Image (cartoon, rainbow, N blue to C red; front, side, top):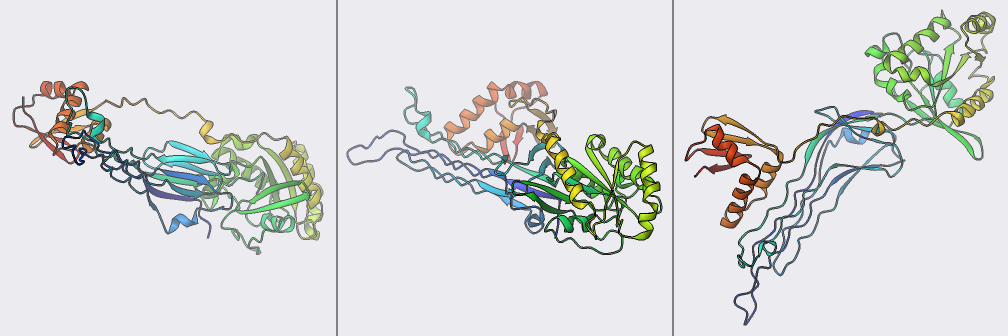
Length: 419
């Protein structure tokens, strides 16, 4: 089964909680604070595995949740950090934020990694809050919550040469002849329902990867037929072999149509190096029309090679020509090198909304700080109140018209306003 597009949910681990604890030892009844820090949670990381060539494994598992860090202990013991969750993906995987559509990364090199959900850090124990004025701090932090988001993964096969053409032009047959690939071959359109990859060894140290792209038809760039799902696989190829069907009613029209579809899908495809080959020359009726087809294409400034995948006519010459072009063609730039606009985000930004029964506060930093606060400890609650003042939240609530006794909602936490 071939799968080249899917969505997954990822969630990193929450950091372990820091603890409030004081040293206890015989003959030392008043030991100082020694509450340990919590351990770091696990991050979620995508890593390129060169042995994979499909996203099919995500068909059965679409939720990936890393483990949380462990709680700190007494005697300044730090809790155990969780292991990162490594998710192997095939080369050519493009990672998008499923909600915003922003490109997060383009994974092409073996072993390349992308952190998609950063682990929450461990909370600090009360040892960190001791001072000359407060030698018995009953203040600690809970672990930082992990991140979570929905990702869209799209696979763009990485091949040196892409075989394109109308349905039943003979692309699969040509791939089977020159490589060890075993695509489905039959005498009817759309035999190939998914891209096939094959490795061609020309000599001991000269090889290239070929991709058989399912047949394109008019309107493919708009999703007609199978084209929309597979046109993106041509984007990474460095050279295109455009195979014309010798039995087609109008091979010249086919040639123009396929090029138009590729250009409308991505204008950069029209800039790729292209070799045109006229297939099925083993058939007498095709051999008869070859001179006229060659003349028409030559008039358009197009060089075309006569080939036969069945008898191997000119097949090796075609592959050598493709190899020479691959060697001279520039390597496609990864998508992550493209400029992607990301608005600068003020980590202290917040907004306030009036709702029935009180006021709701939104803001990344303030919500995380609330989640990391031990509300049962007076010192931790006071520390959060100072944070509200520092970032301007207290003043903003007063300007909005908050009254004594009003409720302030931050995530799942409910605070009562007191002047």
